[in-house]
Length: 177
Image: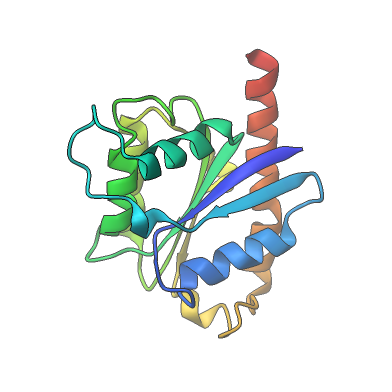
């Protein structure tokens, strides 16, 4: 069983990012368990890396215990939403993401700049971003309905394969380690 921790860059329940994560979860193979972490908004502002509050310790533990991490986020002001960036900042010097297989889905109107910015941040923390599990979905609202059903067949096929890439990468990491 592959355990994937899913993070949304949006705190709004009906956001495109959350709807895409919902679709990915429903399409995941039976041997993949996706756990959503919905408490990014509860993490305090990054301040003192030496003083991890309990909520930050729990967040880091969830990352360590996961075989892979899947991030689905909008682009915000041509960059990374503040809540998501804050969460990642808590992990910069502590190694939770080092060599961890990570999938990145940017679901936005445009998204190119936010996607590139997050890829840069993930490289800074030595995450192992899996190409087969990373995707930029521009004009996402035209591809899903209000309930999160994917209307675009090409996107649906890609989302079906997305967790498989993370599963394969995490299996390779387990075998090597």
